[in-house]
Amino acid sequence: MKKQQISRILDLLEQEYPQAECALDYENNFQLLIAVTLSAQTTDKSVNKVSGELFAKYPDPSALSMADTGEMETLLRPVGMYRTKSRNIIALATQLVQRFDGKVPTSYDELVSLPGVGRKTANVVLSVGMGEQRIAVDTHVFRLANRIGLVQEPDVLKTELALMKVIPEPKWTKTHHCLIFHGRNCCTARRPACERCVIEELCQKNGLKVNENSDRSQK
Image (cartoon, rainbow, N blue to C red; front, side, top):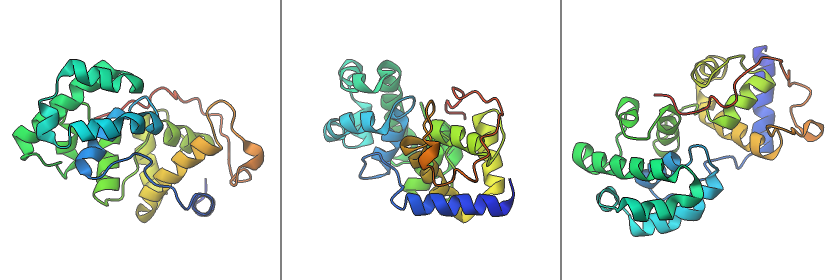
């Protein structure tokens, strides 16, 4: 796809979704980190349904590090993979206390060293919480980037690296959010609403066979 086409697609998506931003509920970077970690393989809405009670009961890393695993599993049951996620966020909080004085680290390498934190989660925290330009590739971003024709890559990591080459860095974060909003509201996995898509005439709908289940976080 030519640069002019990509630029036009990005402009149209920004016009269509001026409100596109992180849909998770959080008040600080600690809460953001936990919420994004919980959002793996589930929806932001599902996470938001439990995060209010979670953060009220465990407002900081110290409190969360001392949480009972059984109680945490009961609280997190609605988000799926609740046993693994319960263990991960308690271990994550413990490491924040022991290694980082209870603060969320500001480097990618330190973030992905935490339990349950992969590439996507680290990129979201650095982007949304710390203002860095990042492209976090989740299910929507992976599917749309390849379906539209922005890139043609078979997995999450290659898609992220390819997008960083074809999208201007000042637009990385906004593009990430716009693609997510477009994936939720129009270009759904099974029945994309092409008839009302703002970029339909530019979309290549390429035939590249990609594994849309390969969006698991990668370190």
